[in-house]
Image (tube, rainbow, N blue to C red):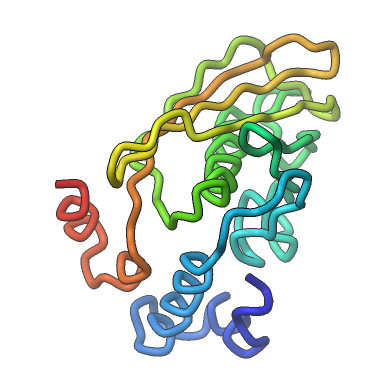
Length: 193
């Protein structure tokens, strides 16, 4: 993604003009077209971030998780340690940060099918607290692909091999125009029919 936007566009996307301005829509359109043009990747390949500022995987987001995902034989995998920036209860990652990790990993799973899609629903099953500074292995895959609907599943294990949580999601395949629609909610409703 970093190569798809030049430095000026990157700075502009971080906050120059109002959302929905023509230049902003152009930047988003080029970003979505870039992601839509991705081809399925080889097993063992590290996947590129969704965008430089992505809260889940963006290298330029100081508050992000900075996930690094790798293509596996069955889907994708990321190894992650939650830090103080993701704290909920003392010593434990916030449930929203855990949900972010699962959702972002699902976004990486799209590279296995070569489709641009968005999250329609996300369900998390927290089986144990996700402790700060402990290593977790997240694995996700596309479980079913029916037309434009993708059903995804993921699990996370701690460094002792205990399952800490699972997630399921429904994604909807969209075109690049989805991200530049004037009314994205209406656009998604129409796309889901």
